[in-house]
Amino acid sequence: MKILAVSFQLGDAMPTIVANMLGELTSEHQVDLLSDREPSTPIRGLGKTYTLPFPTKWSSWQRRFIRWFGATPVSNWWSRRAKKIVERDYDVVVVFLNNVNLTAMVAARDIAKMLGCKFAIYTVDAFPAPGGWIRKKSEFRGKKRIATRLFSAADLVAASNSHMLEYQLSLCKPSATRRGVVLLTPSPICHHEYPVSDELLFLYTGNFYGLRNPSHFLKAFKRLLAKYPEAKFMVVGRDTKLRNMDSILDEEERTHIEEGDYTTDLSPLFRRARILVDIDGDREKDPFLSSKITSYLKVNRVILSETGRITPSREMFAGLNTVVQCDHNEDSLYEGMLRAIEIADSNPDYSERNELIEAFSVERVGSIMKEALIDLIANK
Image 1 (spheres, rainbow, N blue to C red):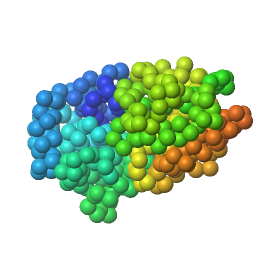
Image 2 (cartoon, rainbow, N blue to C red):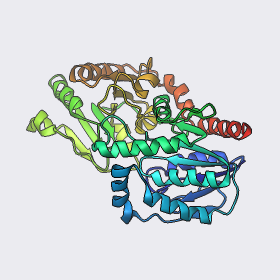
Image 3 (spheres, rainbow, N blue to C red):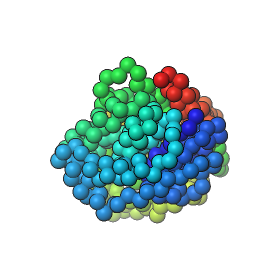
Image 4 (tube, rainbow, N blue to C red):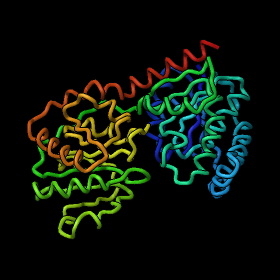
């Protein structure tokens, strides 16, 4: 099978995911890559790399055309240039889509059409982000029009969880031949064992943006301090600003909040933490599953998950004793904090997560993707 993978910004948010998936595909198939830049790290077994820089200075004009007309003239221009440098025939063109590389999806569709081959989309982020993640309604409507055209052209749509797949397929025009498949975010299997921490530290790794709202957690944490005055809450990421913290916590209570800089080595922080915190977007129904959860699962720490009622988190972690699920409200989170402390102090059995860790494994996810692409090509 000859595969052309298309993905942008391989030095930023997507390199690990793309590298893991391509590494699995190259073990049995010929895989070439089209991108706006060279990968930041070598990808095992990768064949030819087509590199064509994208003019980021035009991004503001692209956003205007999306909002006003549901059009992508800059992406179309880049796609026309990309078609001229592709030198080989392929059985399938696969785009690895996140929320920044719309142009990659446009080009993948156009190249697949030019070559007369199959077109597949693997989306890690929902496009367009639904339900308030995009502030400007005009931008959401424009992106939705574009998404309908592009996803409707796909022969295979893969998404990182079942809720996201359902959402993306709902944007497509009906097709009797289009396939859908869930491909969890691939992650190597490993387990991190640390001694029980002497600190009562709640740790959140990542940023608060969009609908990720720390206010409910802070209100519950304020109540927790009355019972556990030694408790701390630490946030580590590039943008760790806690909205509304000053209006929720008084001066003394704010001394229990620590903010750390972004780091790729979380081991010292996991060692300190008693409980790991995951906060989903403040919606009852949301298709996103935070990427940090795959790291959390491999650490022998209780996870406190704030999530809506209809979410991937609610579905995946149901029945796990070491994952405490809470609603987006103060009372639920306060009770969850007490429960998480109780579980953390009871020498819990973290092996209950092994099956889920295996489901996220690079080997398992890569195998599912290979089978899906082979089946797609075989049924022309």
